Length: 257
Length: 323
Image (tube, one colour):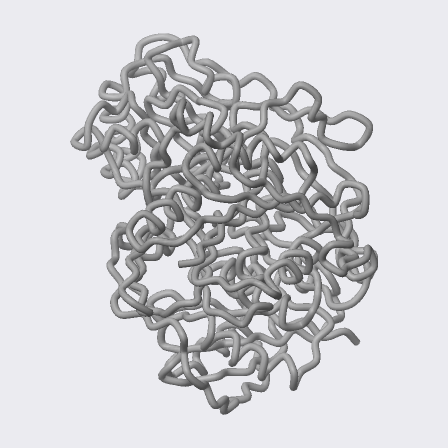
């Protein structure tokens, strides 16, 4: 089975965000595999171990993403592809990323493509469904269970807390939700092996694209931090009195009750 | 005059609140626009179409089909594309819900257009409009605009207030026949795990519990308080990991992002990942035994105390108030 994972390098969830010169300061920040993409990597490895085949992890980004691809290889993926657009693309949106991935997949054979349901940085959740549409294959978003039985696929999908049982078929694109699995940590032998696994680097040229083909449809004009919250009011006294005061404040001052 | 299509989202055959918010967003974008509501479902959609009009839409197009009883990407895309091709709108607005997140990128791809998703605020109007959306799970915001072409946005529930309902308003409701072809994904069963009634992502009040709630039973007083206030119950990742409640209740960087009017955090320490999911709530109350807990740094009102002392007293106090 030909299994592909779409992976994005993101800030660590622990990171505080600072803005410098109108952009998010990434100097000194820790980076990780987008947590939802980690579920995709884990699921891809499980599918391969059960059904055979090969797991290829693909990212669109800069050469810095090599570290996250190596982590995915250390977890057990077989091959990695880094589409480095740093020098070619100034303004990128989901349209851009999808165009690039569409070109990459054009001559590939794929049975299943897995992605995170959203990236924790830009959080648009668009690229998976957009790509499935371009490739003209079905997709199911926010999945929490996946079983492949021949060409038939049984899926459980999270719908704002409810579960939908869905039946579909290969080839297929899915986006992964928390609860799908517990991503493994790379083992030491895994990390050693990962260094020797193939990591292909591509640029727009290699995909027969130029910058105009992938020009973003939207642009970011400003990035800003939320207003700092002023220190709140710590209530004092007996618990009974604090609760009474709280209810009073919520009614008269905050006007939310 | 510009034309704006807004999407009416149904849950249990009723309109979700976010449907009315899409109309308000449309008016904010262009007060003079013709706002056309799309209502998709199995049958009997005219009352829902009229309700959209009472909330400010000028007219509505309904598509009733047995294959639209449940949302599927294929079914709804076919219905939406049929209407979009006929109406040729300047703008499309959909709620950033489970359905909206699944449907909107597919439509954007079909229309070969940009899509700015999860908008919490619109600044300016018309072609100069800027769309504000949280990034990095609410740790920052960005202002975006369209370079050209169609304006296509999804709006986060609970951020753009709906207009007042006006029962005297009326408008044209057109029923459109669409031939819905094969669906490649079939929904076989829906298992309801969420509590009846209040939807976490649309709730005006959220009562959330953390590790300090100590057990699944410990959540019972939280549910009691939530029932009294018409609130939804949520949880921190810690509480979900410990098995006190289902992951469907998790609020945070992974999990749901909520922006209620009132958020009551019970026994939640306030890890940065949790704050990402709730820090934009309008009023935050924190109840925690540990006076140093990080949650107090973003709370509007704090009580240092045991959740199991405070919540029962709060329940009594609210009951007294309601009587």
